[in-house]
Every structure is written in C-alpha cells, then in structure tokens.
Amino acid sequence: VLPPPINPFEVTPPFPPFAINLLVDALIASLPSVMTGLSSSTFKPLHGYRFRFADKCLEKLTRDKGIFSTKLAFAGARKQGDLRQIFISNFDGSGLKQITNNGSINMSPSWSPDGTKLTYTSFREGKADIYVYNMLTQKTSKLTSGFGNNSGANWHPDGRRIAFSGSHSGLTSIFTVSAIDGSDRKSFIAGSGLEVEPAYSPDGAKVAFVSGRFGNPHLFIRDLRSDSDTR
Image 1 (tube, rainbow, N blue to C red):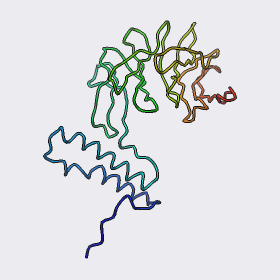
Image 2 (image 1 turned 60 degrees about the horizontal axis):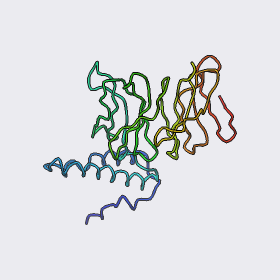
Image 3 (image 1 turned 180 degrees about the horizontal axis):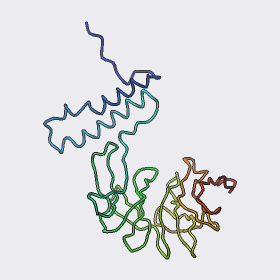
Image 4 (image 1 turned 45 degrees about the horizontal axis):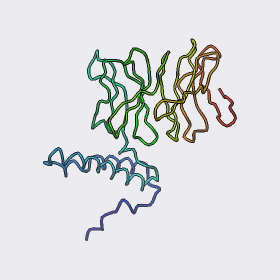
C-alpha cells in the first residue's frame, strides 16, 4: 500500500535547506510537461500559475514570501552597439518586454513599492531626466525638467515621493518630487560636495547616499528623525 501523497501546504517548518533547494528546483520544472501541446494563449496564463504555486509552497515551508512571481527591471541592449534601453522580465528571464525604444541612453530603473510603476533615467531629450512608466496604462510621463541633469530615482516606501540626484548651480545634490506628476520639487540633502544615489530604508526613516564632502566618495546614512548623518 502506498502512503498518502504529501500536501506541501501541510508541511511544518523548519525544513532542511537542502530539501528546500530540491523543492524549488522541482517546482520550477514541474509543470512544463503538463503544458506540452497547449496553444501559446493557453500556456501564458499557466506560466503565471506555475510561479504563484511555487511562491505559495516556498512561503509555507520557510515563512518567507517567494520571489517567483516578481519582475526584474534592467537596462540592456539587444545587440552590440545598441544604446541601452529599459527591459522587464519574469524572475527567470522569461517574458522579456522592452519598455523604452527612444534612440538614446536609458538607465537606473526603479520599481514603485506597489510594483505598478517604474522610474528610469533617460537622455531622450538631450540631458538626463527622470521618467515614469505606468505598468497598468503602459504610458510614460516625465517627472523632472529644468536646467541640469536629474538621475538615479529611488521611491519612498509610501510611494508618494521620489528622491533623486539633481544638478543645480554647479553642484549635484539630492532632491525629492511628487511621484504623481513631478511637482513640489524640494532640496533634500545638500552640501559642499557631490551628493548622489539616495536609497530609502524600508521604513522610510533613513536614507543612504554617497557624498563627496570629504573629497573622495563616502557612504552616509541620514536619520530623517534627527536630521543627522553617519558615515
């Protein structure tokens, strides 16, 4: 008599790491044989179910949310000599989709906290500015303008504002704008040196950034509650 099949949703953690690795490998490879012979229109939604199934199993076994249904955003070129464009794909590289095709350099994509928008830096109008692509409407809008370059956007965890590096009066400092339409531009972190590459902490209480205030680039963390910097 064969034992009853194991329900992965009833397995109680902790689970041996080697077993989790084997399970993940099995989950990723599990459904293609079932999908053989299906039309492409049927296959695509099943491909998504495959990832969601793997997420549920991994979360049950490890108590950590899976990454199988997540998306990658990156700058790349389809062939040597092409200017870099923005692409998105599934976590395993499938489902590749090109977001930009503007004949200029594009870089530094950054997801909104809810995953519905993607900011990136583009030279499409001759200088660096920040644009946002809406995943739901598939439309692009410009978030920064004016003199100087603006680049390296990073979202606040609440999704309301974006921090970025902007040049002004010969200096490069960190600014914020509304994530909705780029309005309400405010100086955020400024000094006598280069201030670039802002990155919020998950709770939004701190910002990591690179500063040249001592001559060479150094990594700092600003505590937004005390307005103090730590190198």
